[in-house]
Length: 392
Ligand SMILES: [Mn+2]
Image (tube, rainbow, N blue to C red; front, top):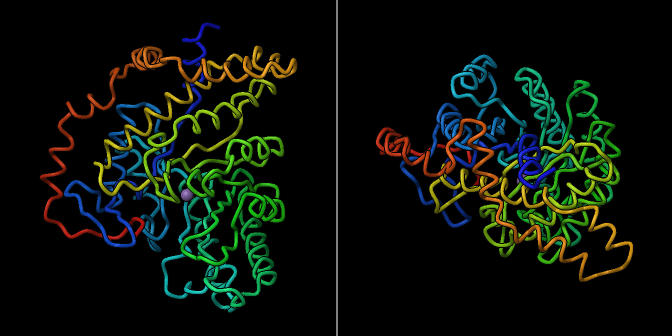
């Protein structure tokens, strides 16, 4: 296969899910800088996501946050109607177990049985919502943890977490999956219940056959070798999905590839190598988890999708036969250069050709800007009170 054909075949199977919360006003612990064009309602989030998909052709689903997007009493038909209207399907369902006051000391791992039950009830509601909307994946992130040594029973809390996840797993339809996310710290600063991939893996294994691990690229200590974690999870058939973002310091939720594109490329390369060696396509949900505080939200998502495609395309042209041969013969410089050659290749012409072949404009960002959508919603949405529906 020619490099261009490799890129085209890889991109045909590469879909990126957008986060509903990425279109709403968001901020830091210190406050929000509001944007007139930010989405306030679920309809506006679907409309904005529809714009990204229309120009990129690779973002067909929108991740939904239960509390912010489909609160109790939301008829599924309303969500399905929006999906139909704006051409983007409901994607992963994200329960919210960190916003309500009852979760001050944790949710599924809370000392109090009634709080654990409330958390489980919310998870079961989330499974029903996913079923009603035809969504396959439930993405689980728990803020549970503690700030001071000695204040939490670590083993008891692990057992409560495991029991809750098992109960949720029993409610899954046969086609559904639960994806368990991990994070070393924040908001808890002493211990977090699911602090790393090993804990997430053990809890997923303990929960049941349809549980997998979700890797959020920002949820690692600086310097951690994320692609090795990816390789191990692939080997164990336990890699369920990604939350893509980039960071310079901690969980910064910056645009994918803005700080370290080579790391994203190395992650994609591990996945492509697995697929090359096994002859199968890894069943991975590629999702974005970014909140742009300063950049324009829709433009930042288009930039993210284009960056993801570009880095995935570079991984698709890695010469794995030559790479593995060099590894076997311990020709270290040659092996490393196989990666560097692919990373250095300008794949943008191949991406433009892929877009032309699918009736898309060659430059999605320019296409979006030419459409006048941003000017229109900036006028329409200006002056309205911001609503919730995003982080911080
Ligand atoms: Mn995440």
